Length: 367
Length: 125
Image (cartoon, rainbow over all chains, first blue to last red):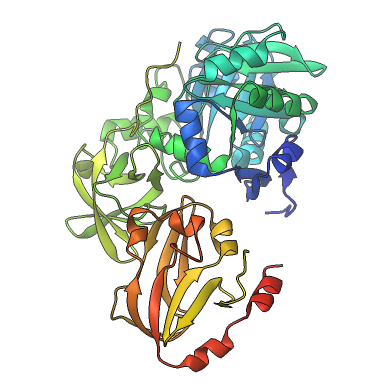
């Protein structure tokens, strides 16, 4: 950590006004909760929440050769995307390990927005810059934008109220819509990290507080990083740095769906082809505790037949299920649904099993 | 009243109330507020001998597990079983229904090493 002073979100004063508990996160000072993580989690499942996601990185990639170049850098087939579409994809190292997971939005035929993890933004930029070719330009605009996520079973109504009179409608799933705001261009993105309906709104930093307040006025509950984490875990969505790492591939993480081995060469492809042919040794599996007990946490030992077979990458209490859930890379033979396991928590053993992801299935909610 | 006058306090944010040689122990209002909503409490079994400063219980919020230390030496004589079903009592009534455990104090001199309300209040600023 070269810079000990955390960055502040453009929404910092909003968080203080709402009495948020601020914590350091990935070089930023961000709200972990306002009133309480469990209530915020429930607000999203049964209503609508708004999250500050301004810490995430916004990278613009443009140029006539940008689509082909991105095909070589990322696991998805970006040159085949429709303009106005979004794709979850990976940036891999040469051995097929995950540097970052990100969403690529195709804004124009030759212009893409990549939204990347805060903790990895600098590394992503350095990696991509060192590989630039032809007329491709990479513009890191992370400091210039604010971003919020409006998520929940009732997000459609909140979105309608928020956006009324702004000349733009909420985007459909996996769509991106540019719009004018705050003296610049904002983007409405039909993506999220909670499993619920909703969208993400990226805008020039100065317009951020206004959009955040509009979401609150439209009925959204302010939600912090605590609920963001418990919501994504219930969905079995990976968190880079916990569930994804440079030592593990998207195939081992069970995310081969987001890897296109047929589109042509890309960084890491050779390693993935080899791994696919040989079969993955471990898989990122969902783990559910059978009874009420202490919350499982990252780092806890996972046992099978009395022996440690894995370490939890992610874990926590599922507010919707009332039980502990987590994820771990299990030897393939132990990764089948219902395989009995135990978790070691402070020397005591608790019964668990391999469970299907998502752990929680939101009501059919996406238009 | 977030720091009651009639209690003694450990710097690690436990409170102690002594009654006929038995110390009732909980965590302070300040501690529960810092930890935020508790979702699990692990308490010691009656009969266990504990030494002042030993980690003897664990309280867990959504985000973290935190050790609770014995503020005095002695024998655990009771634990608050109510908390198993409803750990949020610690948040709601940290000095009442949210007590954690009781210790039969081996040496009442241990209490002298604890803070009074004004010293603890100053410590948490």
